[in-house]
Structures are given as C-alpha cells and as structure tokens.
Length: 298
View 1 (cartoon, one colour):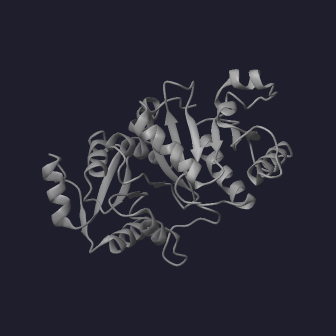
View 2: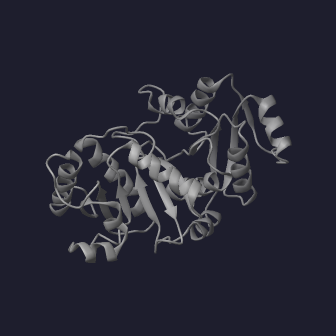
C-alpha cells in the first residue's frame, strides 16, 4: 500500500516512463512539473500549444525542453483536441491539463466520437497528504459533477474506490459527508448517505466499507465520534470523503491548497486512462504529485 507521495515517486521511477500529452503547455507550473518528472525519467512529455509561447514560458522559467516534441495548436480547443487525440490513438499514455480551462479539455475528452470517455461517469479525485491526518486522504468530487444525484454519487464513489485499490488500499473506508451525522429528511444529502451506507452493506458498491451521513469532523476524528456517541468503523479513519456537491468539495480542496502545509494531487477517473487535472492556479508541486499519481494509476 502506498502511504505517501514519496513512496509513489519511488514506484513511478521504477516503472517504464509514460508519454504525457500536455494540453496548452504554455503554463509555467505545469511545464515545470512535467520537466521535473521527465528529468527523473518518469514521463516523456509531448507539449501541445503555441510553440512560440511554450518556448517563451520555458525560457523565462529556465527550463530545458529541448528534447521534448512540440505540436503546434491554435488556441485552447485545438490544443485540447490534439492532446486527446494522441491518447485516443495510442500515441500518448496520459492526458494532462495545462493552461486550458477544465470545461474545454473535458469537452474534448468526453466527445463520444473522438474522446476518451469510458463507459461510466467521469469524476475528479483529490488525494491529500497532510501532517494532520494519519494516512492519505481521498476526496471527491471538487471539479466535474455539480450537484450529483444518487446514481452519480454511486459512480463517483466507485471511481474513488478504484483509485484507492490501485494504490494498494484493499478495502477503503468511505465516509459520506453532509452537515451532520444523523438522517434528516429535510436534508436530502443525509438520506442519500444512508442509502449509500446500506448499499455498501449489501455489497452493491464493490470492495469497500461505506458509512454515513457524517459531518466532516466525524469522518476524520475518532474523538468526535466518541464524544457524539457514533459507533462506526469508518468514522475517524476514513480513506475517502464523498462530498455532497461541487461547492463543498471545491472549497475543501482550495482550503487545503492555500491555507495548509499539504501535498495534494488531482486526477480524473472513469476515462480510458486517468486524466491529470488540477486548477490552473495550483502550484507546480501539486501538478508534479498529480503526474506521479497518474503514472501510478495508469
């Protein structure tokens, strides 16, 4: 079981390198991250975008990209389309978001004729390594699914569980998050959580343990569960936080990104191969950890 990004890096270095198509590579942090990964022979970058701007960006950041192929693209849609096509046609192993907006790259990835969508729902999985928690913490979905219904939550949960399995967590513990730990029919999120919990009990969600509803403190703090009298095997020891909607998940993501000393990554699951997708404003370290995760999950 992988317990840290440091362990993930060791594993990534030991494996054959992966070809990554970076859409709109003229972005400093993404270009820095992929160049660093290439220096460790983890990846073989393919840069897509304005060649002039890519070279300007690299020169300004003092990055050596002389050995990387560059594919000229005119604008974000063209760049996203060409990057997706490389993955679809087997000329790249992974897709990575650069300066392009999430909506544009996902439109290309989800195209039924030319994209790389899988058979189910695509969802974003964040993995967090923080000194304030005793293991890696997965969280979903801060980027794609706006107000998921019960069916979509099932698919989001399964994608997160798959990522956890691929990182060696045999039976991940899933905490379904709401505003409180009791079912309240005036709060549909808590009803969904109770249904998901029972579906987990009946082996409808794969190899995982599901409980909820939980307020966030119940999910990550055993003391909170003890004080509130919650009898649970998941509470205080969750591997995965299933968030109620994109607002809660995105605020959680960006709170960690900007107000804590945290290592984190962002990956899209459910496509033909993982998609390395972070916020354009994320640091190069977050983008590097996302590359490590994509390579490990691929």
